Image 1: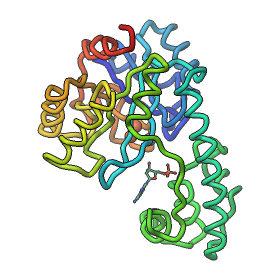
Image 2: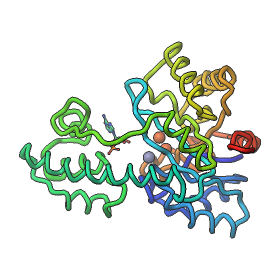
Image 3: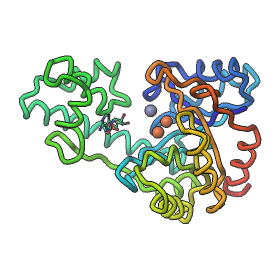
Length: 282
Ligand code: AMP
Ligand code: ZN
Ligand code: FE
Ligand code: FE
């Protein structure tokens, strides 16, 4: 059993990177990937712990992309160890643009009469790294501007609302190209998030495969057996590696465990070798 999708406190999970590796060993995994959002900063610590415990470690990250349907598209990248490469340079640029957006968003909310400051959001997030709209939504609830984080999104933060401020985002083709140029492989994460079904989903997956994506996450923590089978069929149809993982986030998604997801997850060891066979030059 392996787990190819986990988040540490380097992004929006709650466990340190080394702890993710320990949890994978406790769950009986033979390999574990760390896939924090838009960052490879947790890789060295996770790698060291994995070497100490004798489990195979797969470096990774998860990049938020331009939507292809109503919902956002996330792409996992594997086998890129550090940021000294084209993917890493782009991740640094994305983080800079996120910070610019966050400062502008705090100003916009203040202009709209909501008594919050950028510093309050930094305090909420525990630092300037990785601040996202969920942190703004929490602070908006705390100051009583909205009754819930859902209301913060619906009234202010989503596209079309007064405090929506766009940030730079890559396409699937961009991520596929950057991954390959950095020795890695790109994989479509939880494709049902795109908000597409049936032929529309199939067409979009085919487009991404044509753009150089190497795999598709089929065995996903929260998907039903039927959904996993549907994605498996798309993997075969478009010659993509069928991958899987829990999307563990610690106590931020308490129903998901490393390795086993909601309890029924089991990604086979051979998936990793299949994925490695798609690396450039493999
Ligand atoms: P950001 O990367 O800062 O633009 O924030 C994106 C995150 O906001 C997503 O990962 C979701 O967790 C959250 N999010 C986006 N849209 C909504 C929504 N409509 N309701 C609740 N949370 C949302
Ligand atoms: Zn996340
Ligand atoms: Fe995701
Ligand atoms: Fe994720």
